[in-house]
Image (cartoon, rainbow, N blue to C red; front, side, top):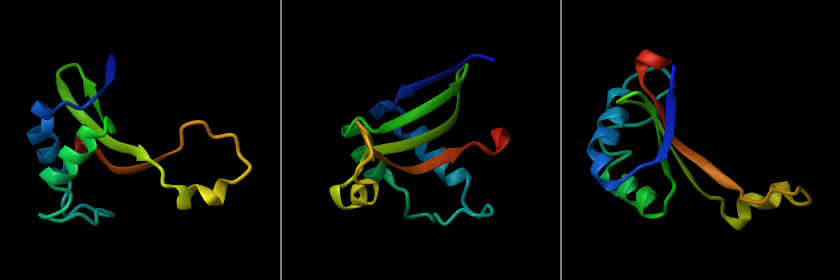
Length: 97
């Protein structure tokens, strides 16, 4: 199978929100109708931090990889991390889990 990972674009926001909402109520999902929302998606896209995984023309997953804050990184002091990030809002289509 050919998979493609790319940065999300604003025109994909509605599809990303639809993917998030498709997971509501599943085991382990703590999201609700209000989170994640359009503002979260817009924030992640504007920070070049939202990535989408495609299987041909089907969006199958997305995740936000925002820059980790300094306090978070204190736990890793002494490591040689070059571009630490905080992975959040990871969504994988039910069909691909």
